[in-house]
Length: 92
Image (cartoon, rainbow, N blue to C red; front, side, top):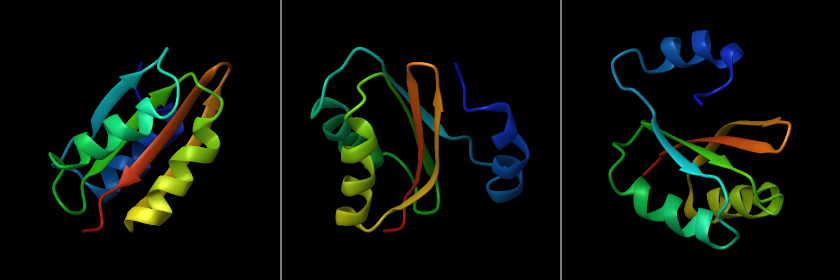
């Protein structure tokens, strides 16, 4: 699964040449999604984006907290049934 269809034009407008790094974190319980996001952000260029696909409901608390604590930006957050999707833009 990729990001929601309504994000396509927004994503292309923001970063036309840099595809988002997408992490499939389904089935992982906190704190694993945040720990893996932290590690994956090392590979993302400043201004690039990391998309997390999670099934743990606690990620709606943990991911925004992680983003605020690390100085990145939570560009989008969505829910599709049992799937929680977050798009983090690396700021530093």
